Image (cartoon, rainbow, N blue to C red; front, side, top):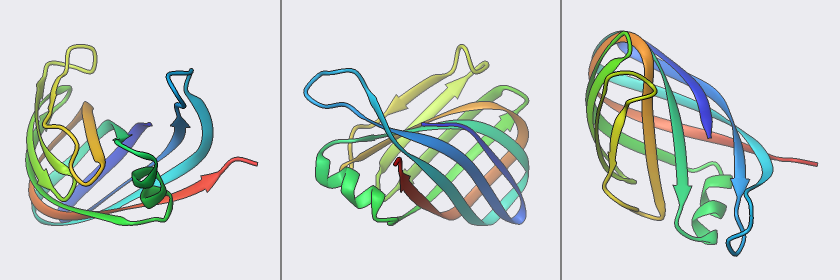
Length: 145
């Protein structure tokens, strides 16, 4: 769970955030197992800045292990954010999503299901940005203890 990811760009852009990694075993409560950093680089038509939350779900243990190995996720997408209203569509190696929302509390997000073992949900928190980009994300995972 990345509660706050900040993104900005003019032609070339970047984003970053710090999150916590939880594991749920056999229907038990989620357990904090580590921390993760998100780094994103994007190139394309883009201007502005935005802040959003991102949640990643893993379909199976092997998918979680791929994530903790620091693999990249490449994607292409189009989005527009004005303060806390947003609309976006995205296609990537982990699936397709579409969302629209009035603010963080009323954001509507549609997840198209798991692709390659991952499902990603993003919720706009605010900003003013439009983009049509190709981007790559890298996650650096650090286990607790």
